Amino acid sequence: MPINSKFSTEVYHARDAMGYTQRQVAEAVSVSVRWYQRVEKGEKLPGSLVMLRLILFLKLDVETFREEVGLLVPISTR
Image (tube, rainbow, N blue to C red):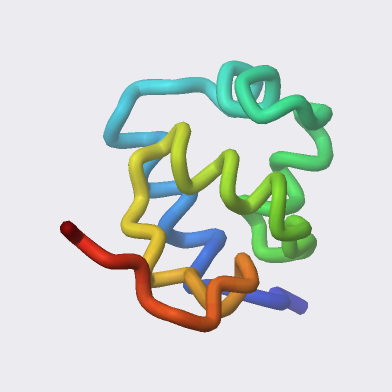
């Protein structure tokens, strides 16, 4: 049963749009390929640090996931 389908869906679509393989993303954020596959399937929710690495590497909007990464105050755009 998926834990966080929104995050997994966003990660999958961003990876696919950028043309990366699952292996490339896993290596870039320092996790195993199998672990990353479980994130994309919604079977695993990464901790704050890995989630932030994924958000930055895949150029996702951090505001969409700020509560999951522990940012309680919106990030200033200044």
